[in-house]
Image 1 (cartoon, rainbow, N blue to C red):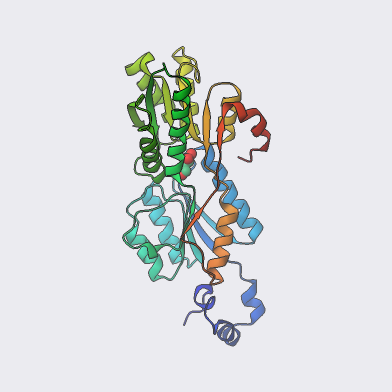
Image 2 (cartoon, rainbow, N blue to C red):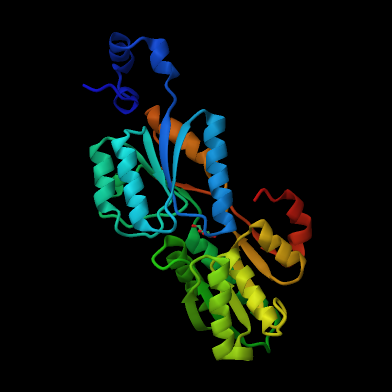
Length: 323
Ligand code: AHR
C-alpha cells in the first residue's frame, strides 16, 4: 500500500501504520500540498481572490500548486488531471462554468483526492464528487441588486426603469444565479423592465464594448444598468461618459462585488450601489483543507457573509476595504 496523507489521516490505525513504515518526524515534516485551479485574472475581484488564496496558503504552511486557466474550462480540466498525476493532498478549484465536470471529478474521486469548490458551484450528477463548496450566494446577490432598485423605484414614482443587463461569463454560476435572483425580485415592481441583456464576460473591456452597443441601439431609453460585476460596470461608465451622459444620474447603475474600483466610482458619484461578493476566501479554504485531511466533518456548503454598499456610504467604508 502506498502511504499517502489521505489514506493515513482519518483512519484509526493510521499512526501505528505510519510509525511502522516511516520515521514519525520525517512524516510530520512533509507539508500538505493543494492544487488550485483558478478561473483566470478577468477582474479586480479575481486578482484579490488569487492574492487571498496564495497568502493564506503561505500563512498556513501549505504548499500551493497554482494554475491559471485563463477563463477556459479545458485548461482547468488539464490542471486537475495534472494535480491528480502529482498526487496532491487536496484539489480546489473555482470552476469557470457550471457544467461538464463529472468525468474529471470522478477521476479525482477514484484517486482518493478530496475536491473543494471555491467561489463557484458546479452541476454534477453525483454531489459526492466534491466535499464542500465555499463561497457566496450568487442568487441572493441578484435579489439584493433588484431589491435596491425596487426601493429606488418606490421613491421615484414617475421614473421609467428600462434596464440593460451586462451578464457575466456565459454558463458560469454567478452569471446564471445573479440573473435568476434579479429576475425573481424585479417582478415585485412592474416598472422594472429588462430591455437588453448580453454578456460582458466579467471584464472592463467587454463591459465597455457591450454598453457602447446598448447605447447605440437604445440611446436615452436606457435608465438603468445592472452589471453582474463591478469591472463591467466600470467599463460601461466610460462608455456612458463618452456618449455624453452622466453615469449614476442619467443612468442608475447597480453592480456586484464591492471592489475598491467600485468604491472609487461611487465616491466620484458615478455608480449608485455595489452589492458585496467577498473574494477573501483563502483563510476559510485553508481551514477546510486541514479539517478534511484531519478527518473532521465539514459542511457541504460554506457561505460567506456580505453587505450592500450604496454610494452614500462609500467614503466612510472605503478606508476599511481590503480588496
Ligand atoms: O465568481 C465571482 C465572480 O467572478 C465575480 O463577481 C467577478 O468579478 C469574477 O470575475
